Image 1: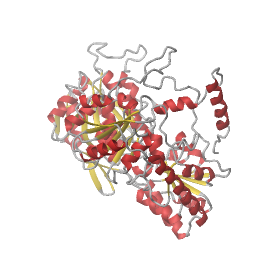
Image 2: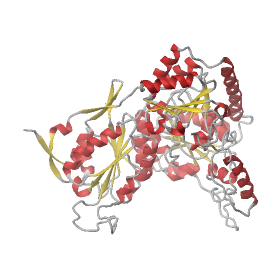
Image 3: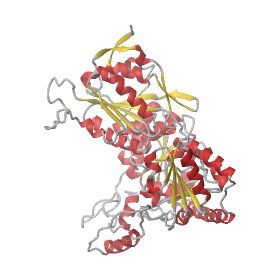
Image 4: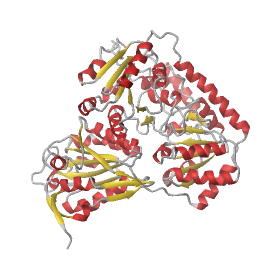
Length: 627
């Protein structure tokens, strides 16, 4: 007879999660390393009580904002190579719906996170109850159904025994390298507290193997033939390179073939910045070197990339009439993009197989091609040096000079986190990445507010490394609340706040599309209804200090270097605050090297919009569909 243990649904779930492990390449680790939670009437008597009862088995972290808790869990998961993540529990109602943004970010970026929102009573003892959404045509709908389209797996557990198959399916999805993303188990508050006789086998240690599938032999042979026929091939390295830990395999492929490697935002760092074949970021926010290679490439080898519009310059970048695409991707969906030849495989496995096959054929690009991209790269590096150069150290820095000061300080152990604003463009063009995981840009969803909570999660996964959250004032004001969590738990993140008085990135974009920066500056309103008055008297440094952070103010380039050095050496949460020189421009970095499609008003009376429309029509006419 099968032995059983009587526990509540919440107690059983916590005990089950504590016994789940992932394994890849012979390395095993906890799949759910901890649980974040904010408690209310939808989970305080269920998951809250269960976590209290199982503190030794399941560590708990207290959050301040539900969205931020998801960001922290996602930061932890990315730093852990998607092999470990955190769970997030919330109450019903607004606590649950606050998860939606974080869930979308996780799913878009293929990063695992387990969401455990409370839900309304399954038994309906009173109807409606507090925070229940009434839908006249569907009595089983709750606000948690908002999480369905942004979850890779969703299940509402309305019976205790339904936890068993749904929990197992949840773990399957979390550890699937193709399907992973946000997983939601919605937990009605009465079901959480209901007891059931659980089979002991449910709580046994379970190991979920993360697969590394190799390439189909026919697809591999086709891929080798396509590469051998190419004269100007270019690799576009995406986030899948990092997820697979395929950086060394990519380096060997590039060194064997001489093929240059450009990187997306998610793929930057796939090669070190000083690797001979690294040509920097590609697309709208990329380098001139990569842009020119992309325009003239006769073969684009995408490795672990989704080919977003930033990467393809909205379909205008890969301009050669005869360009072909070879897409190495573990997801067949991405492997077939741009009508490319798919090579469906794990990035590391596929690259190794390609390298071995091409080595047998002694394939290598022409010396003239290698000389061309090497010289172009050297010219771009001179532009980076010029952006970082400081003539007057006692003046306020530009944003590139802020990055230059940080560049001069860090080594390969530092990790930089950013997601939104003008910084992603500057970092993609200018930052010299020293290690595979140094460059942590969340640009699949580009979610303002991600940086600070994600830094906490990253620091938890890499406690011995300096972790920097780089934020502008717009992003900081979105979600500074987890600074309190960093202080409470002694998570020694470093936060660099760059004050430029508004949404600088969108301000620049607004100007380029004829919007004249309307509504993008943090200024008092003028009489004409525009926000063009004096800058707001907002003191973000004082705000950070009020939340418990140690704050270092820097007014000049010289003071900035000193403050950054102090922050890097600190063993407590520390913030560096600096106001940049270029308050009314995007940043002072080199302009975009490729187009990005943001539609412009087709009819307008203001001259700026009319001129912007003319330029837009010239760009959009160069778009092509690769068939």
